[in-house]
Image (cartoon, rainbow, N blue to C red; front, side, top):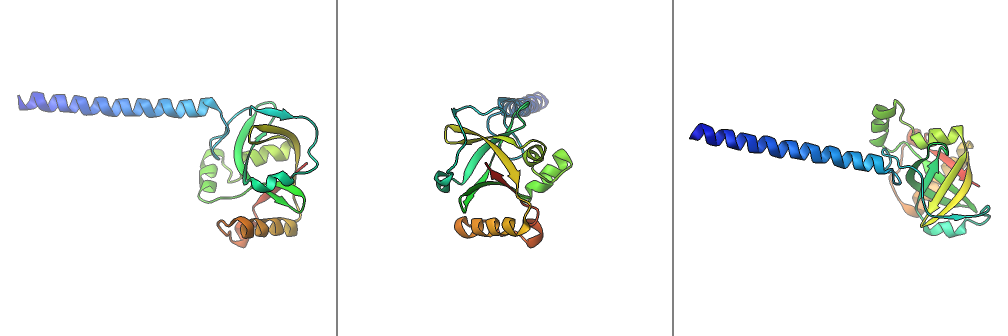
Length: 178
């Protein structure tokens, strides 16, 4: 009887473990296939919301927003949440080597850079979602290292956050939104 009881317990444990693994796989598949706005290393797809026609000339309303959802790669939409910053009348989005996510990105894509930033460097066409509104914009990488440092320093001063080493800060990519 003792052997029979142990066998029943063993089968029950195996059943619970199998059910847990199957549930975990299903949850992961649902998250990946739903392709809603992404979670850094898990991107989403096409953004939905109210399209705002025309070009935005005054981004000052963005001073109250810290995060936006952006969509790059129009032919195969790729969306993520990222930080934004309004500086001297210009809106910027930022891609940075946030550790330890840089190591995760390195393992997944053989690059520590944000995938969305790589796509944006190839095609500057972007859709930016703020609340339920979507803006069609163009993004231009800020290449002036002094301006990058100024924007970064102002962002840290105004909002706080982890202060990066000069080497890490030099790896930040800011994109001007027009």
